[in-house]
Image (cartoon, rainbow, N blue to C red; front, side, top):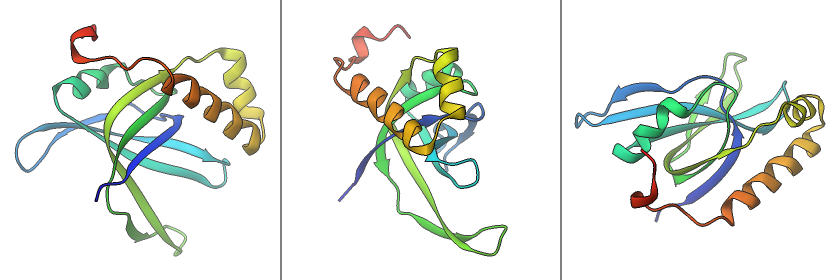
Length: 140
């Protein structure tokens, strides 16, 4: 059974390109999902397939995104502080870009965790209500 997960957050750096063992192109990036500067939650996102890989150049540092994908099995690891942590990864199936306005971004950076969560949840709900694009309507 596959768990489908929807996350909303910001991208700190551009995706990196690689290949799978089968020779398929993949792009990997992280999304910072709700949290404080001291304790952010990071989710690794892997994009595969022609359509999703064409989105990779448009995923810029600072972008706000909503990603829907299949959750991979969480893996435990030991952090730099010696504490056991869990790594989360999803295989992206769709991506929506959240419009970013300077005032909103500054408010997000200065706001409390609750304010950030409320804003991102509202953006995710707005984007999930829009008509999904099919492959024939994509501009790339």
